[in-house]
Length: 324
Image 1: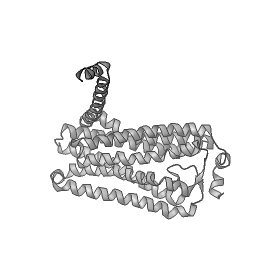
Image 2 (image 1 turned 90 degrees about the vertical axis):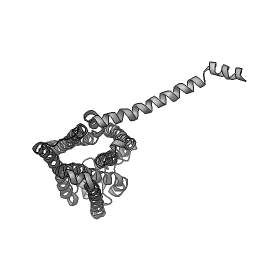
Image 3 (image 1 turned 45 degrees about the vertical axis):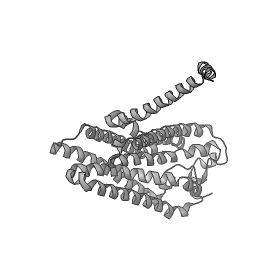
Image 4 (image 1 turned 180 degrees about the vertical axis):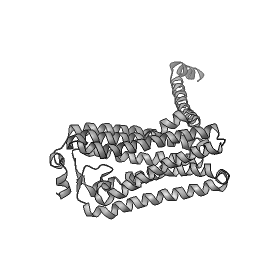
């Protein structure tokens, strides 16, 4: 169909081939991880919404991060459905249309990673100003930065993609970013974001140690949680880059498609499913909020179930008949 399609060794094999069990199984496993991650992120958003103590600006940014990461994870499930229904390849135009929300979510999520770090860094460097009006100013500026970066990403896709509209792709989330026009931009952007986020947390801990700042137990545990989440994302990103640069070129096309690519996707997805488990494990405040929210819901459901059983029992019916 196009020269790029001819360079894809799987195009002639999969295009029009219908159901491909190997691809369905591998991508189904990745999609399952994504759905679990989306459920975990949704639970974090739900807990943050229900718990008043988690309505601070930093907690709101964390909830927004979990919300946007769910759309990013959604983008990794489309390849599974395309192979499940036997399409296997679709045009880049169609792929971009269904990946629009995941693309926005991906850009917003990466921007929020460094935004959360900058928010915590401002709170440590300018504690008195931040506790006053500073937190409102920082919050608005960081949200504006995230929106700007997301808009630039989307415009970048639409600026270059008309040149390749009809190119057949398997519709991975990263398809539009893998072409020469976009490759350098996205590599530089991601490297800058992850490295900037890493520097933020290193500076936060160094400044806190140097000033011997008195941080509350909840604040310290929240910082520990965010540092763990950052470390997971950072090392997953570095691991993926090293794998793609040094290992993938040594493998054949089949090994890349059935081994390297699924491993890279699984590692990447894992990084964006870890927020809720890490916060629940490391932060007392979040753990208490999770227990209060979900255990209370379970207790209420159990209470309603018991009351319904009591109302429908024969004794109650007999009692009602006798009173009449």
